[in-house]
Amino acid sequence: MTRERIPNSEPDPSYRDRRRQPDRLLRLKAVISRTGMPISTIYRRELAGRFPRRLRIGVRAVAWYESEIEEFIANPMGYQPSSSPARIELRGYLPPSQA
Image (cartoon, rainbow, N blue to C red; front, side):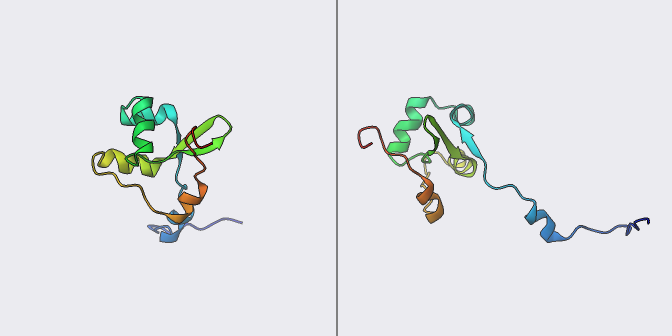
């Protein structure tokens, strides 16, 4: 049995959406590399609400959503955290003084 190819056929537009990757998580080294900011500045701005909040992914591991870091890089002085309910539920970070 042979398959026939349809010449000049375009893939179904919804195919691209189905195989699209979800938002990636960036670890601390990648965030430092992309922003050029030291760790202390990242954490200080995060606590002040001027940097994306980290997501605890393990006992001693945190990460940030790539899309939020890109949003910050696009406008670092005017960055406002997103208010997406799904993201807020996933964030479990408490500053050490409140843990």
